[in-house]
Amino acid sequence: MFARPLLAAAFTVTLAFAVPAAAQQPIVIKFSHVVAENTPKGQGALKFKELAEKKLPGKVQVQVFPNSQLFGDAKELEALLLGDVQLIAPSLSKFDRYTKKIQLFDLPFLFDDVEAVDRFQSSAKGQELLNSIKGRGLQGLAYWHNGMKQLSTNRDKLERPEDVKGLKFRIQASDVLEAQFRALGANPQKMAFSEVYQALQTGVVDGQENTWSNIYSQKFYEVQKTIAETNHGVIDYMVVTNAKWWDGLPPDVRKGLAEAMAEATAYANKLAGDLNEADRKRIAEAGKARIQKLTKDDVAAWRKAMEPVWKKFEGDIGRDLIDAALKSNK
Image (cartoon, rainbow, N blue to C red; front, side, top):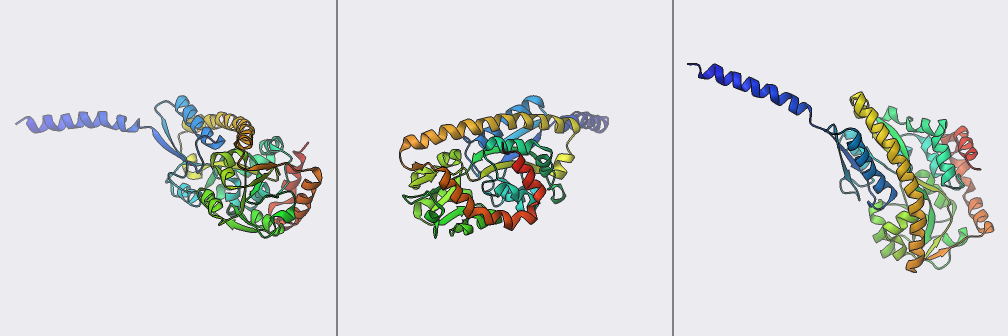
């Protein structure tokens, strides 16, 4: 006659212990990106995981998915907004549909070098851009460097703008980059990053623009004849999260993640410089693609050919932002 109350009591005790245990489950943070682990972004993501789990033991579990394992670069922003992942680090070009101001980073020959990029991104104007997409459900957390862009083709000559006239170039989905190649008389082709190697190999496109580390890690140098050292633009990333998810985190978790992100950013950005320099040497040593150095006159010719792009997008970007970026050059 006492069995039923005792059983109920036992169940209540069990339930009482089960609730705190469930509450202590770590917050799972999926960090998805589209490049290899041996790139600055790949290593930065792993460093963030290490730091976040160290700062918040038992509170967070960071899972990193490189090489488009979860989502390609055409789908990752949508996945973030849907809550399927919590962190992504797309190229800055991907954000032009959310705010035209970020098109600034695609303007050709705006920054003299990565140090200038860094100075601008650390400035008040640069930091404002991280928050400029919050109204669209996205919160920027940090800028991660990839590096300065070089131009490559399957042709023997690549010194002046006329050398690319009529050629097909893979570009990221960006109106500015499309206008850049149109200004050169070339044919831009929007294409996912994961498809570029095969497209170069089969001749679907003749060339592409990328950093030394991406050209090396994705083996683009194996299927291109010439890489011109143009440094004509920058490929950087914005580490971004779902704004609602971020704001809903417990304050101590958000603080710990922000600290881990700041440290991972410093690590990734230093690595980007070191890796680009090392990968440039590796490409040269491989002897498959010739690295074409440009004279000052060559660079001046490229700059002049791309001038119309600035005029076309100045209204959308804002002259104040362009001037702030130019001031970062020394």
